[in-house]
Image (cartoon, rainbow, N blue to C red; front, side, top):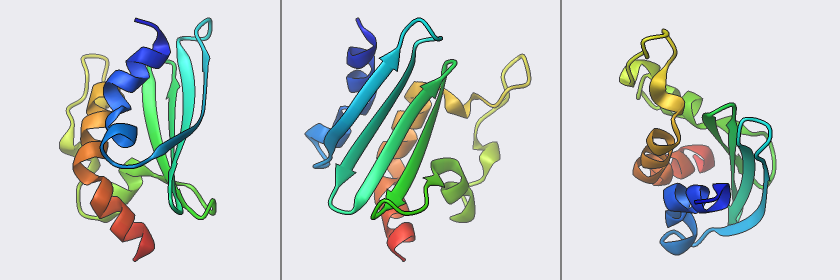
Length: 116
């Protein structure tokens, strides 16, 4: 499986089920398998980045300020400590499968919050 297939395997629900369009995708396999993707539905943009194995998701309305998914969830009362720490004391919430699952679970609430 190449990295784009891995991305689609986890985040394909955005285009297949939720009406987002993949605006751009790039990867740097020689650099820790990093990738970046930008998706859009109407005025909502989602930027998904994998950097050194950790996945980060950010949102923007009308291409304005970018908001980190986990900060939004924290502000909505869903705390950072919802995921355990790894053996090396790192927060495990940045794994791709966890980020994809949480995005699928909370995307509508996040969109409502941002448009609030």
